[in-house]
Length: 294
Image (cartoon, rainbow, N blue to C red):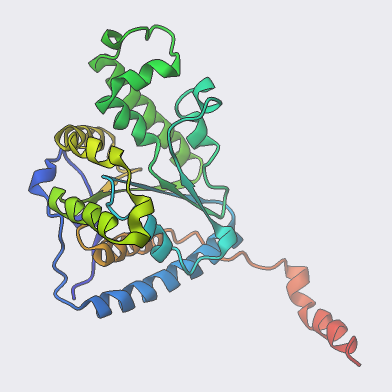
């Protein structure tokens, strides 16, 4: 199969999701895709070790997608070879009472990666221009000054929120955070099949919620909101990638490949050199330890 290139999936212009494929034909077997992912994630794991030793950058991986798009399993498979201390996963649910006492970006800000680490957001700060745009009544619970009724949640409100998100991400990048944003592009038919699988397989029943079907009825509205949010916030310093997600294994390979390709461009990320004095005395230190066994 041909080498996967991030530019193929990067969003540079306003997009129409209906024009983009939800299934990628790699022209290879599932077994080969599995082996390819194993090779890439091993390299990513080694990169994370170097990133940690270097200690000047953090990496933020943002995952968005419709229900059943495969975010959980992608996280499990792509980051499997990372040092457990080197990656932290955050799944953002309905805001808590405490979170609602702060601005909408607060809970995301405190979950950002420390220098040398990866943070993975399973659902992200973009929920604040997706779910809340489909259900604008949720905005009222944020107690924002000047937002007292649904009529106050107008287009000017959403434009301001897009600007705030762009400013937030630019600030992060300028201070050493490398940002990746992936939209797992799932077809409506594939979602139907995955929901049915949750119902048919007893071990998958726990994943199903009647609310999944209620949100599915709003599919077109969600697509419209995703198109607008992605189009307005895909920037050179924090680009969006639209990843075909009908094939879970393929989606994982694409995401892992994009991460590795982009991170390898940071030539300044390398293990620090030992202090000259320590380096000059390595043999002395070794001899001290060897004598302890005598």
